[in-house]
Amino acid sequence: MKNTFLTFFAMCLIVLGVVESRAQEGPPKVLSIFREDIKAGRSAGHESLETGYVQASRKANWPVYTLAMTSEVGGSDAWFVTGYSSFAALAKDRADSRKNSALTAEYDRLDAKDAEFRTGQRSFVCVLNEEMSYGGAVDISQMRYFSVNTVRVRPGHDQEYLEARKILVEAVKKANPNAHSAFYSVTAGLPNGTYLVFTPRKSLAELDPNPAIAKAVQDALGEENSKKRQKLLSDAVISSETTIYAFNPKMSYVSKEWAKTGGDFWTPKPPPVVKAVAKKPDAEKTAANK
Image (cartoon, rainbow, N blue to C red; front, side, top):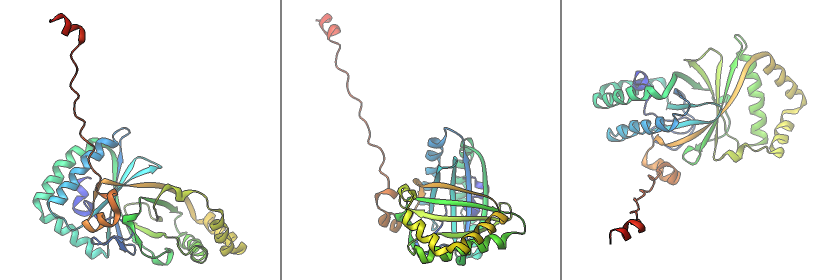
């Protein structure tokens, strides 16, 4: 993670349900996201370097926790996302990090090395829209993936897109009350009219088609609303892209409570040390020496 942004973003709390070390909450009101684009073939080296940030945060007993996630499908980037209850809380975290000179110095050292693994980086901030979200609190420590849908809307067409989203939200709430999705509006760092939709998943198997749920949602929409929604989306949306991100426990800095509720996944054991096997004497050389 670039130290340029570390005072604002680094060693931080992840999205959807984790604010100030609590594993099960509603989605944070404000998200600060730092994205790193990783060079091809350098993911392992990047992961190894990022564990240094985790160790530095643990040594400093930093009170804000991190869940790192890397793209499983759809790119070669890593996300570090901070969740806050407000912009005031975000500002406080930024000020506190600036005061910790030892931690900042270690971040600087690591950051100089981290640059060799990246092709680019970007930071952006977004705000929760509860009306456009659905589902209650989720224990993210039990999850292993996020589906992140990035939607870009034509200038001046935000209300049409939000109307289309609201139609879908109301249908999903009726047809599938167990579904969860958090909807955020990007306020800075990306083009205006950018929206992010986060869906937590326990496994990739949840991506398999479910005809029964699909039909229930379609029935809840109804023919008239379905046509209206498609027209609104056609008029408003420039692009829509979904990326699957896998949680990375090695690059994550989580609380003891989080690790306990989330199981061994959050405290991966180091690989076993392979002892060198002593070579047996060459039979011919042994015979020659006799």
